[in-house]
Amino acid sequence: MPDTTATSDRPGSSGQGSALAADRERLRRLICDLAVVRGQVTLSSGAQADHYVDLRRITLHHEAAPLVGRVMLDLLRREGLVPGIDAVGGLTLGADPVATSILHASAAQVEHPLDAFVVRKANKAHGLQRRIEGPDVAGRRVVAVEDTSTTGGSVLTACEALTEAGADIAAVAVIVHRSDASRQAVEQAGYRYLSAYDISELEI
Image (cartoon, rainbow, N blue to C red; front, side, top):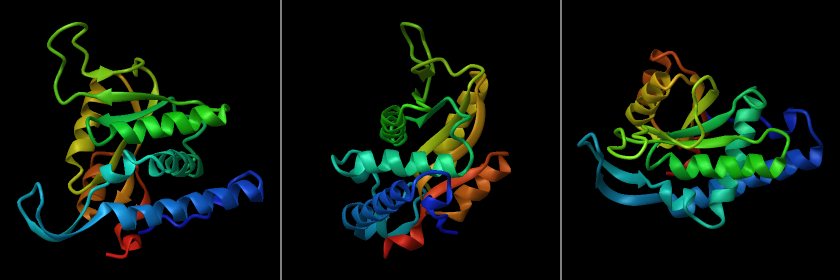
C-alpha cells in the first residue's frame, strides 16, 4: 500500500510540511523520468519483465540524492523512529548511497544526526577484518535500508550481519516498495517494513 501519510501531520511548521511534500513529489517525478526503464529485462530471479526500476540512477543523481535523504528521513520521523535510532545502512552496494543521503540530511537538521554504515557481502580478509564498516553498531538502534527490494534477500542478509554485530534493528526501510514478497519476507523475519513510495505511484 502506498505510504501517503501527510508530511505536515507531524509536529512542525506548515511551511516545513509543504517543503517536504514538494520534495516528495519532485523525487517521485525524477524516479518516473530517470529510473523506470521500459523494455524486456531478465530479473535476478530469472523471471522476465517488461520494465526495470533502476534506483541507482536516482540515488547517485546530483538532484535526486539530497531528495532521497530528506524524504527517507521524514519517513523515519513520521514512523516514530527519529529521534530514537542511531544509524542507517545496509548491504553494499544498493544501500550505500541511500544511507549516506540520510546521513547528510540528518546532519543538516542538527537535532538528531544519524551515522551511516556499510555491510560487506563477506568479512574483509585483511586489516580489522570487519563485516560492517563505519561507526560501531554494537548496542545501537539502527534501520536497515535499501533502494528497493524484490525478495527481501539483500536487506535480510544485512539484518543477519547487524544482529551478529550486536545491533538493535528497529525497521527495514526502502525507497520504493516493489514486491509483496519482500514485505512478507521482512515481516516474517520479525522486522517492520517501511517504504517511501509504492510501485503503483511510478506510472508504469
